[in-house]
Image 1 (tube, rainbow over the protein chains, first blue to last red):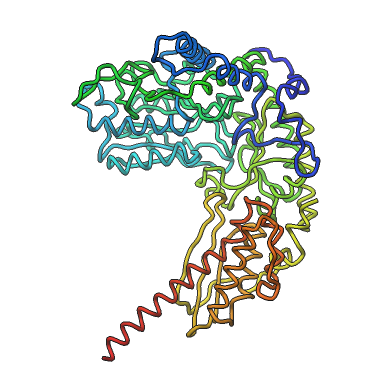
Image 2 (image 1 turned 90 degrees about the vertical axis):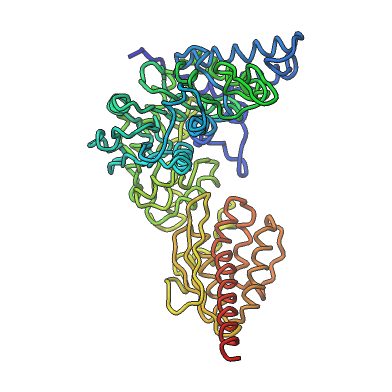
Length: 425
Length: 158
């Protein structure tokens, strides 16, 4: 384990202009919704602004100076973002967001059905094949696979959950059968906070020749992630959840897979030779980046990973672990409050979902909002999870490097206020 | 404090002691509506007798705003002409879209005027409208099914 140093939260907060504003009649903004989207430090905003003010041009086309500068900045961002997860730049594909990254894999797999390339064979699915997901997937890593099954005739299977919010891995070989072609799962649950163990799943998946796709939206922003350590084949995350701009996401894939995979979106930039009747395609990652890309956003995400690297991801993780433990203790101590998910920080990150007896999460969230405490309420785009736990919705607090224990205190005080307001204390 | 403007006593009373809740027979149409952003849902049945709404029964899960709104709906439309119920629905919809600026017609909306505070919160407007949208849908289907049945009866008798 790397030694960690405590974060100077006050110093960090000074980098985030939005955190100094007030909400709802002068309340200090207590932002506990970073799991939905994070706030942005000035360094990221400056990088985007400077790109537009000094270097803006369409990348990978044109030979003028601005085109060169824009292309250099875009590719430099790719290299730094790759380094952030321990991957070479040639394995980093820029997408609109993680949802698009996951759809890219799913659609490339269905496009494989129409490809004459022998290399596409390993991506082909049909009736009798199986796609495996889990009951804790975000809709972004569930619906695309449901749709892939509909298009190809493959069958969807899934791992269920235990009562404390872990994957039920009691029968890995029975869920991932010889017929499995893809196993798609989340690294850290956006609702439960659970960090899934990958070894048994990746070992079994690769034993039967299935590809493993990891939704890392809630892990890459919050803990050190090295793709080589995970044993997965593809990994997706979004820039806006890790201090970067919206409109930029990343698909990482093992190089040999990206080279063999048919394209998803086609058009300019992704081609090699175009004839009137047919075309050949560029090598990855360009093969998967059709059209003029979101350049300023890539530059902004590059600045975001620079920022996170300077703080140190091990330090970010340690800080969030402390906040999570503090929040779990404080919330569990409140009568009538039940945490949905693992009860301690073992293999668990900083998404804390809870229900308050007798008060609907919408109403909890409304009272919190009235006090300036901004949380997420609802099913968090993971409807099967709340259904599994027999609740209509949850209230969810998520933490990041700019949150401190005073933010958790404000949350707890707000929940107590909600209980008084609705007369359930 | 904005809380009291949203959660007026009338709303909290209806939430804690809902009127007309539960699914009942007989009914002419049943609909199931959800609020996909939060997962709240309602199953709602309408029974008509000629032009009158003789019962609205409902069941579901949701926040205090959606539950109270369904309770108020039941008070306002049951036992009244359908035309009146749909006029209330339209007036309530306009109130909800008023961003807190609406001039509520108290004679028509009665307890439903208490929801004016909700209209200042875009994320909660759907909560207040969930039951009303279900009612409008179910009433339309009830009328259609009666018209279809009458058409069959008319043809059968000629």
